[in-house]
Amino acid sequence: MEIQNWPINQELKKEADNHYRTNLSLAIKDQEPWEIISRLTFDGVAPKLTLIEIKGLFDWVNKKVLKNKLSGIGLELGAGAGFMSAILADRPEVQKVYAVEAVENIVKELGPKITNYVLKDKSDKVIGCIGDFDNLQLSDNSIDFVFDFYSLHHSPDLGKTLRGTSRVLKRGGFVLCFDKTRDNKLTIDDLDKLLDQEYSRESKILMGLNPDIKHTRRQNGEQEYRLSDWEKAFKKNGFDWIEHYHLARVTGNFILRLIKKFISCLPLFIQIKITKILYKNKKVNNLEISNLVFCPPVQNFPKEISLIIAYKN
Image (cartoon, rainbow, N blue to C red; front, side, top):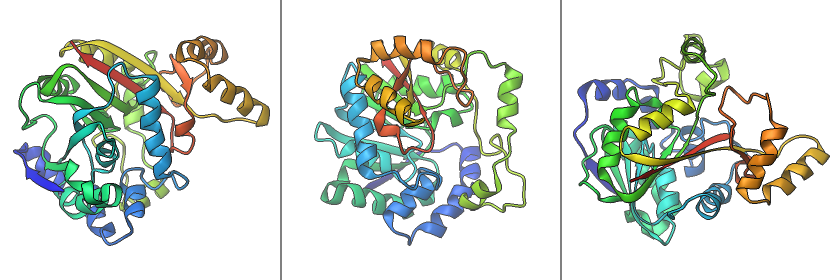
């Protein structure tokens, strides 16, 4: 895996150097690749998740959702050790993926190990970039698709981030986000309360933090964006077609699981009509659950996923 050093905002660099993930990456660098992936990418809360399921999720999205398929040159924002970038790069239609991450230790200490684990002798298809996703060192109109796995909601200025993303995307290119879109009914006060929630003791231990010291989601650099906030930010910054889906797991008692499994086989537009009735007035973790579809590959993910796709005009 080639590693590039891009210019990085000094405040961000200072924050990254002091971030818990910097120390965590050093603490786990000698562990087995899947243990590193479990701790770093999934925060240690998805013990049943497998590599096949993650690849299956991309297959599902590529087949059922995307108008333009995953191919060409990709870019991942907030890529961590490059695990998801490697999954994408493993697709034969994908030429290479730039994996942008601000935490230097993660890229240097963990990136080569993780990309080699997934790609074997094709690890040169991932380029690890130590940098700032608000300062992309890529040419205009050079990227076919951009991927985000729970990273864009860390952007303090989503509009600025998406402006830079739009600049490097080709016409017809798209941003594919596995992230979280909060319910449009939530107020600013509601969002602030979510940000001020403290991580559980168990979560802090998994993050390598002192469990006796208060640490909130706000302190972790998170932001809260409702679906309407995402849509507004995309539309103002060069994207003219935005789609949103809530990827739900097949859960419940035996009969309910059978029903949901059957629904999951139906075309998406029919699923959405059915789930609008089934989930009327229901709430799921303060997420926007319009366009809810059942997605079998997310069954062992730690949480249900908000899927956002935005196409550049």
